[in-house]
Length: 176
Length: 430
View 1 (cartoon, rainbow over the protein chains, first blue to last red):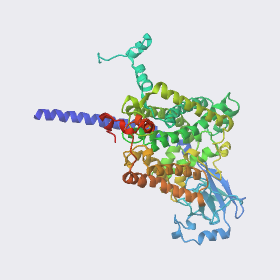
View 2: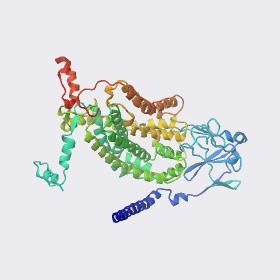
View 3: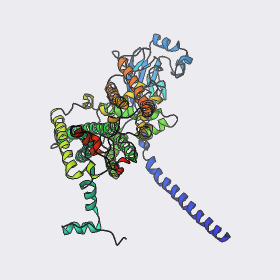
View 4: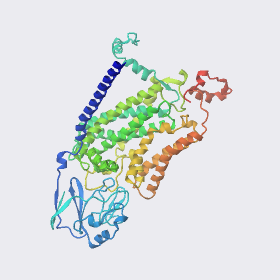
């Protein structure tokens, strides 16, 4: 009886270790395949862009391409800055003060990708619809952004992203 | 091996040689020759065969298109235009493939309507239904991937919107999206993998279709009266009766699809997709393919990102459990006086959802989408279980031949003279 018990234990051990080793081995084999689908090194390295902003007038805004995405650079007017500052952050869906979204208050730099489903919001051209808060309006599913790029109305859950950027001098911004 | 295996004997010695080594000939004879089909099956029962033929057409035309297509963001759009202008009969291949996709969905939707109305999803065919829903899911994924390949504006922005659905998932969403795209937004890595997956998924579909067909052949096809075959009087052999019937259906289908391919090849496509993809400009109005529009309408009807995504996927997932939501043992809606109308309402509602899914999500359209959304889920969660419980179904015929006997019986003095045999009375499935 005791001998049989011992034999079973050995068999159990063999079974368990075979299955475990097999599972670990399979996972180790699958990992490189899954990982190969992540962004490649050259994609990750698609670095930074320098932009000359000297030609942008007050109230004007330009679109540049950074890592394949549109980035909006807007020189805001006094009214637009005031409209953005006057809002209580606590009233917003994604609470953030205007001061936390800009480095110099006349320059607003945004990733021009709607946080809902990734469309490019309208509002860059003078003739575009700018939405109810006079900032940007996403035509796909009707999200309204204010003059600080914050979500005010519609399905988008978050404010427009701020890319990492720095002023190299008064006329040049480095994005990324 | 079993020495006593009975080998089917044919006159042709070559067939005998094959049959002895691989009994494939008797298999085909059993499954496609002598296979009994209920004799009351109408043309709705031809849509499975039509779908199979369309799948094969899509695979063949797709392989030939792939010979001239380049999956690179700089060249994809131009290579499709080259197929249209320079490749011999390239235009025909492409129009067959693009319209074939639309017709594939038309056929499969009719096939699903058939299964729902006549209760084909019920015992003992639940697994068959589940495999079918799985095929439907694979088809939607494949068509979405394929729609990205021409790299027009709708391709690019459709891919952007759909892949962004994954970013709605809390915590892992953003990372999952990046992993799926192979980049931070839809780009060359995305186009490459979408092409690879679009090429392979149809073969997966083909495999699941094999299981789907094998499963239906175990218990046999359902029929408009939703009762099982009980004697030889109730059925006809697949060959030649159903094959001829399917061939007639196929001819009608061929006329319909040819009319579109040759006279209105862009009826079901979006003009904006003839503009090359531009990552900096979103089209004013992003429209999904019509066959995905009902689900897109559900997505947009919900004013919350995660909620919309969950309900959209939920709308498909709920189909998997339909056999267990329906409590009624009567299959065919022809014998369900109340549920029948709710079922037809469901079809109309689905159509309406598709219609508003193609239009801007505002005002009246949004309202229709929201009402449609409520009916869609209400149908599955409330109406289907509840009606099955309160409804008194009409009396089912004793057998399939009885359906025809009843039509004649009044003229020859009452149906009660036909006494069903005890075997006929015992319907274990009801």
